[in-house]
Length: 64
Image (cartoon, rainbow, N blue to C red):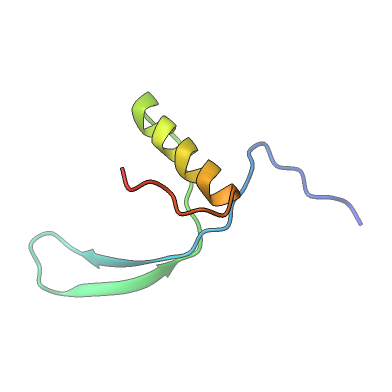
């Protein structure tokens, strides 16, 4: 069987979201099965790296 090749590492992620359109009181909820960051400012990239490192080490990530 051929092994899948990816350009970037992947990490498990699952979360719940709540969406609203404009000022509407109507809301929808959904579960997110993944995220992809295409453009990230350097400061936020450092925060993401800290979170991913903490997740890989099995610890809770920082809340910043």
